[in-house]
Image (cartoon, rainbow, N blue to C red; front, side, top):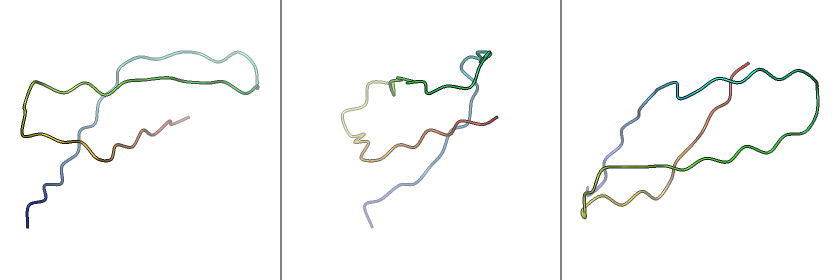
Length: 48
């Protein structure tokens, strides 16, 4: 039905937060060159 679902799990880096506060995290999604690939949704999970 013209739809593909897949997932990737990885650990890119780690930081230690010294105090409770509000923080802003920025990231980018990088995929290999593939003209037929169209990413319409991506999710990021932060774990304690």
